[in-house]
Length: 104
Ligand SMILES: [Zn+2]
Figure 1 (spheres, rainbow, N blue to C red):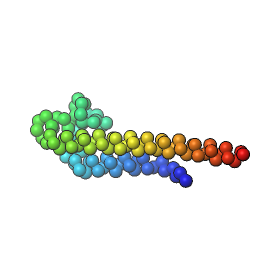
Figure 2 (cartoon, rainbow, N blue to C red):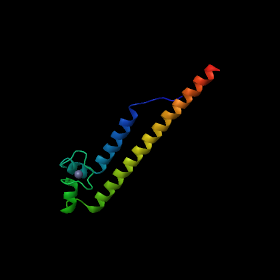
Figure 3 (cartoon, rainbow, N blue to C red):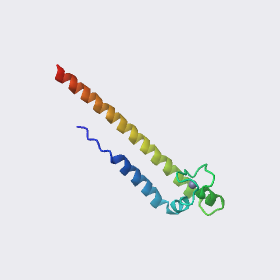
């Protein structure tokens, strides 16, 4: 049986983001000063995180770990969504097979 839980995706995203913010709280603090709210802290102009990195306020290694984890969380999110899509397609397949069997 396939159970659809539309709230799962949001829950997953929140926990990943909250986990990152807790681990890198000083970066999360800096990020509130970024020019863009969807700042990735890598190439943006007006990024407070890059600024802190450049003037030595932020440790290079910390920043490196943060970006690495951010990329990983994006990767997990993507694979999760792909999995969900496949499950949906599989559900459709099952439904069509069931329909077909009923007819015969
Ligand atoms: Zn930024």
